[in-house]
Length: 403
Image (cartoon, rainbow, N blue to C red; front, top):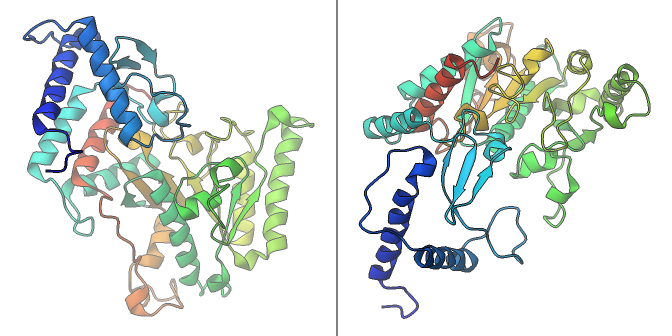
């Protein structure tokens, strides 16, 4: 046996102590009290906290955290918007996790849904299509309420959803040469300064925050940035400022060569860059510029989706329809990892896998064997995650949380 390995019995004792402590504190979570074998003393609680902290410092690489300071006491349970720590302290989670726990913590019906779904179908290749996956795609299409049905490509996160969106945009143009002969040249993605779109390579390149990138080496090529609307800091009135930033997007596309630009990506309300609410005319102006240059509009609703702005989706406040919309976080309220890249029917028609089936509509530079979208995510559209998402959306609608 490895002399550095802790005996199994010691690990079991720690687990038992943790479970006993959680049961003893269950009243904080508004749950029925559970019987405990014996009261846990303050000394034992302190010892357990020290043990968990020591393991954290020894083994855990905490996200977005300098490790000079000791870790806080761990969170053991949460209900509503309140986090309960092992030391008995409470904290209001004003950010709802990472802008994701839209229906609040401790929803037992979501836990029950996950349990039932896992018992029924614990995993399925997303290429095969489970019933929850199909029903969720249909539900999302209903919520978007476009003229024609929307199509959802499921991922496991918002970063992956944006990566898929960039690939879709570039491949769309390669399959659109009947309408735009310059399509195969279109590869550039324009994003905005201050924006955050994810931590994978392409999504990070689209992100407009230097601190997210410094030290990670050269970014993938083909990503550009323009200023976002920020009326509070502008030197002009909101209407003039709005017109200026829309004009800058228009000029940037022209200067780069519109035949080289595939898509523009923006959040309806910028989240991590300062929670910047745009002037009312901004997204309509952006839509007009994209249409003028044949550029696809991608709206990143990973944060603003599912009731966070007073509508089911943030862009619904502004009367625009994107070509591609990405979502995650509130889709399951964080109870399961799930994201989606959702496209309009016009975009999806270029990916049916046989251009000959759509004479006069689709002409592509790609051979038949490459005309479909050649991406798969192991956990994308996981049947358990999709079942939880459906129940989560049911809660949002039933309780009118988006209103």
